[in-house]
Length: 320
Length: 262
Ligand SMILES: Cc1cc2nc3c(=O)[nH]c(=O)nc-3n(C[C@H](O)[C@H](O)[C@H](O)COP(=O)(O)OP(=O)(O)OC[C@H]3O[C@@H](n4cnc5c(N)ncnc54)[C@H](O)[C@@H]3O)c2cc1C
Ligand SMILES: Nc1ncnc2c1ncn2[C@@H]1O[C@H](COP(=O)(O)O)[C@@H](O)[C@H]1O
Image (cartoon, rainbow over all chains, first blue to last red; front, side, top):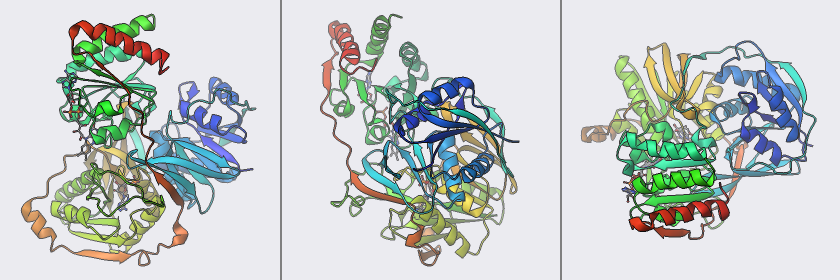
């Protein structure tokens, strides 16, 4: 049997949702989980529910904050000691930055941001979007082990009937080694909400928003349905929203359950970033806007009147 | 300072992607190629650092097919001094690309003080090459960088993470920095710049020259296919003020009963 490790980040007293998605997908395999720092008991309970065998809290000096080198050195040492064949992580800011470094320390390969995968016996086979989701391909890994994989959040979904595991808590000493690029400070983002790439519902505004202040009608709706607000590039370039909010080929690639596009025409570069959303709603005054060809539900109308009505309807539906 | 910029040539973002009949890759014959959009920020950053550090050189390096050299010509038209092209298929994996880039940098005979890349290539969307190359060269690196300042020996960079939060790093050069939108505003290549670029040295190397063989393959792709087309959705007319409330009520209802997303 392949020896599998899932590396996770901690988010308050829990692990990231994508970690549980990966564990659920690996049901039937023996899978360990590791995080830098102390994994809290709530998180261990979640990991047990989704089948983790051993849960390793990795501890060492200079690991209180993320650093590419410190985390890579620490994880490299732990993976070597455990002789893992596969290492999975979520395609988060840390996962995307860290895993290629660790893979290279083993001269090994990595599959980036798969949206699905299977273990055929001991062999990994994944699916991933390329060319910003304009096509898909099968991805396999070859060459020296361990093999590394990052998984796009929200893509696998949560396994509704997971197999539970022992989740035996372990503590392991790791060495961060020499760190030449070190965090001096962290500036919090404007939004404390879930990041676009992890959000389950997204409401995006386009050029038609006309003014940054108008985004408040989207914020109000987002508040009601627990959504994160995004934007088209035209809205970002016009200064209505920061680049961190841009969805598309040169912004974030997102795959929420529900994507509501308000005053967005549906240019190919925007579609590239959101076309794998499960359900798409479009609000646009132009009945011929290309976004309607991708929308499950299209509303031809003025967003400035439709959005507030919709917010009220959501409130009524959700009893808020 | 010896400044190196890695630029990839990718299909224009408007390009319609068509998988080959055998699904081994995409049809590349009729594609219009452009410099990877994020790599424009890397070239611009190199030129800004060069301007601030007299006597510096900017070398651009690319791994890919020689059918079109648009990306390297654009970089030199913007102001880079010279270029290296490692001739290779356009579908090498990130490990092979990074190893070839490393080989080309070594062939240049210059030791890098600063390496710049884009944060992501918009064709394979891997976000791997900068981290792999930095690890191979044993230099520190920071990815998704939206701010850069500093001297010829020490820099401070801003890395964008989830929710628009910014991590501020202190980094000792030599280092690798992968640039995101926001770090600068790339200049346009001027007409004289384009003319001058034609006379700038472009050295072509083979994969064998840089020591990359089939044994370096780490990732295997197959079965390139188009995503399944969505069936046509439902469209509602809410241009008439009298109908708006009813239409919105219906759609919100469908999101719960039919789409089951609420
Ligand atoms: C290299 C490159 C990369 C790019 N990357 C991205 C990217 O990552 N993300 C991205 O989004 N774009 C990207 N673009 C830009 C893209 O081509 C489009 O220009 C952009 O998506 C358009 O944004 P928009 O839909 O908001 O604006 P527009 O295309 O101007 O559309 C505005 C829409 O609003 C509608 N409208 C107007 N008033 C109202 C109203 N009151 N109520 C309802 N609807 C209204 C109009 O009918 C129109 O359809 C990129 C382009 C290039 C060249
Ligand atoms: N074939 C290549 N030639 C030169 N630079 C590349 C190549 N592939 C990737 N890069 C650089 O690495 C960055 C990230 O690419 P990737 O890891 O493929 O997403 C790009 O923005 C380029 O700067």
